[in-house]
Length: 493
Image 1: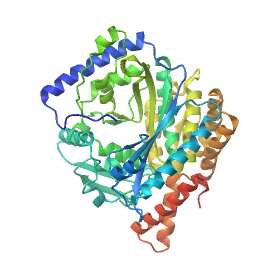
Image 2 (image 1 turned 90 degrees about the vertical axis):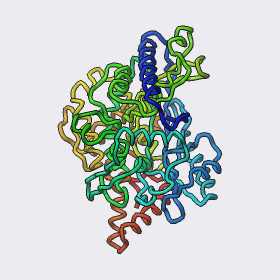
Image 3 (image 1 turned 60 degrees about the horizontal axis):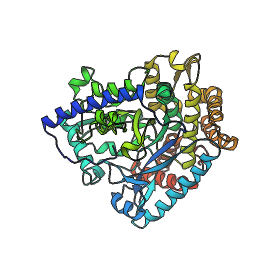
Image 4 (image 1 turned 60 degrees about the vertical axis):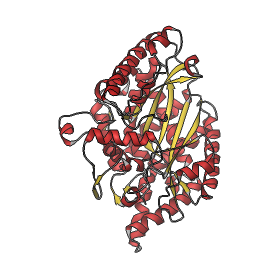
């Protein structure tokens, strides 16, 4: 989805040709899975962090073009909203002390970016949803200047044929109609990538789906949207509604949503790409000149651009990724699981802890002789995910052999030892395991994640006489100060 498109609108003939080309790409991909040599000898991890920009009063700052020009670093890219930027962390292996070096590098890079952003009157915030964002902020020039974003917006609304209803009931309720996909821009996340072999992909994806609920319960950081307290991780439901191409009638018929947890355990990465092509109409039918069958026959690596772009417009919470390592057709193909469950923030050390917990558990669960997904229904994994998004650390999660448990009990008694074992198998140094899993332990023992801290702080400020907008701005002010301290959120006052 990072590539620019060349058309703002598409003809019927264009869409028909694209459908044929995507199917051709899928057929070639199936052949490659059985015949090609995929890159996975040195598995790499990657991270993307989506950030918000605020002004001196902690209100949204629509300045990403100016800020990116000041930062002048290709690791920082535009995002959907003019108040969003994305930081792409270079991939690296897991073993040894790599994570500590990565933490230091990410902090240094973000601090340098913050210094440069401040010259434009902006500050960078890592948080799931910017709590001071209000409807009037998304009424004007909210979108980043990009043909891709405009084409995506137009395609979604052409498919829907009507405005989008955002209706979320939580501690409070929000019901509002949107004339664009602007509310999607409020959802800023951290994405975790893991490179895997074709043979190991299904086990890793299934394990990631099992872990989505506990991940969210621990990492929730998005309780407010448009001034209302909604879910612990409101970003999950907001993103689903803001990109929904289905009018009410298609929802009633059971047509699948584009923001999708999925509906079954898989046996191959091909299952996911095949579902994408079978169930989801194209949103951005960009045609390339590549003949993937001819490329493969000539001994070159097909880039499969149509299949990859289509995959980028199906928003799975754990997304399959096909990519090519090296220069174009001379490179080697590789596969990744892209974990899109977690919000950004609150601190770099919190995000590193979330990553260590995820990668450790993924290794242990994916290598289990009797995997957890053979002992629980897919529906149970989905229900855990939604329950955790709604209630965070107050959720009740189903776990095989335990029944219904609280996230703290599940993490402290069962998941932390498994995460530690997985990181050992990755040959991660003891000090790294102790540092990051210690953060997860502290969060589980205190019940305080980013969402809980935000709600507690706003409630206290309101009891001291501030109205909701002022309380949200003051909370965000304190959040930003503590974010820069890099103290884990469970220790925040």
